[in-house]
Picture 1 (spheres, one colour):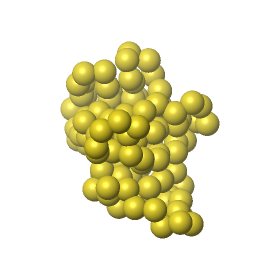
Picture 2 (picture 1 turned 120 degrees about the horizontal axis):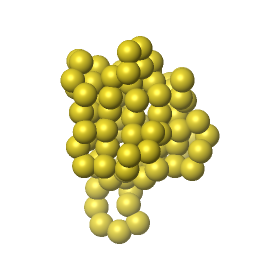
Picture 3 (picture 1 turned 90 degrees about the horizontal axis):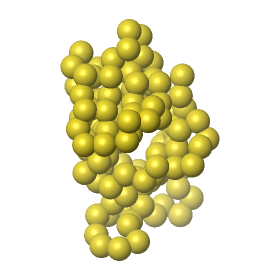
Picture 4 (picture 1 turned 60 degrees about the vertical axis):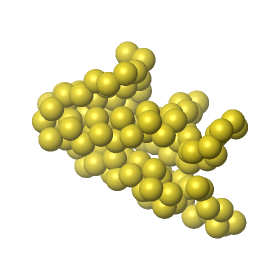
Length: 116
């Protein structure tokens, strides 16, 4: 089962938000807001029993786990409760509530830095 760290930040260029997703301690994948929303929606649909593929992101129900692939490469294998937790964390980041989450919960930001 995969573990993760999600971090929100301003993009180097333009407005909005980017979310870095690091799986099992690997290099982070950077998702723009649209891709993060696609992942959140895909997890929701897959948890409801509907496999989902949109653009470069796909989520597939594989018996007792949700398999997440980006660019057709499997990046995570999550039990249902972990997939729901990841989905909830993505929702929080996209709503501007929090700056970093892990599969074990929120990470406190000592500077209290808001993300627009």
